[in-house]
Image (cartoon, rainbow over all chains, first blue to last red; front, side):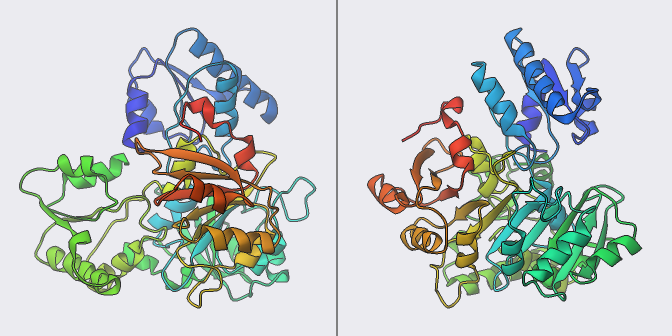
Length: 233
Length: 233
């Protein structure tokens, strides 16, 4: 967590949080701070987002200083901007405090750089929550298969078999090194090293479950995760 | 800066820094902490990197607790991993504290989300320090031209004319929205909105200088930077 985020929390009247926000931070809050856990909102996802927006606006209009606490980076697949726009539309001033995205911090903590001189000059962060070919998918899996940069797949454990297949079909070699880092930054963190061709089978063999960050690319082979004393499989 | 980074600094005997590290943090250090500014190393870049590696190892071997402070994310075009490997090779234990990368925090502070529901499910961070076609370039500009995800160009101000040309040549529409954010997070921060086809001319007209983050993609058109009260041109 950043110093700026902690400072904002210390000044909050209301904190609106969900299941990805770190509990330690919430334990630090003063007793008179109202804590709202939106993970407990009972309805579907779209309705829940609308309810969150309304809650933020209503509390701010009541003169409260509201902090919306999200795990990771709220602008990386986090719908953070939808909440910013709802506030802007309601005329409520707000400040964004950038977070540390798991897409980059989890590989870093596991000993894998997303870029490395002489290896890659670009990386792509992709949501894998929809499989390739899904009508709502906005991801160009063919293009990512043809590129050589590092890929960082989020929310991709369930769809890994079809994603790995699509990437190979469009040009990535089956031998491309892959690291699957589950429970990043938690005591249960585990890194499994494999290849693109074997990745789906390896994930199944090791019973990998979400949340995980999957790193695809040659940076995985320059990495030396044992330098950090991480648990490697 | 993160709470973890600040905590590490408070425990340091030696702090090795360079010109991108925030000065406020250095002003907080105790008087007996040795501060080494490697930006002042007189030699060429490769030699300077070797000298930094040797310095880190030498101080650690002398029993000092050494903090290497970098601006942004040291693993995003930051050569951070080269220093980690030098320490690992010397048998020196080290801990990586992930930072907030400017590639994501600068757009967020300027009111531009890198992903947005219904607009894009992926983004690519690219170094523009080498022009397309340069023999040492590892970037697949043709592939990036053909993709539809958000592009975040770092170190790309000088090469923007040739980069914009390459992206259009390989499929990105000249009308693709572009935001050029210079001096991100500083009092002199400025956001210039333009299109891919006009971006080079706009940057020249407004005398845009590094450092800048250049955002290419439809997320720029959903953004409403005035919601933040930013200075827009």
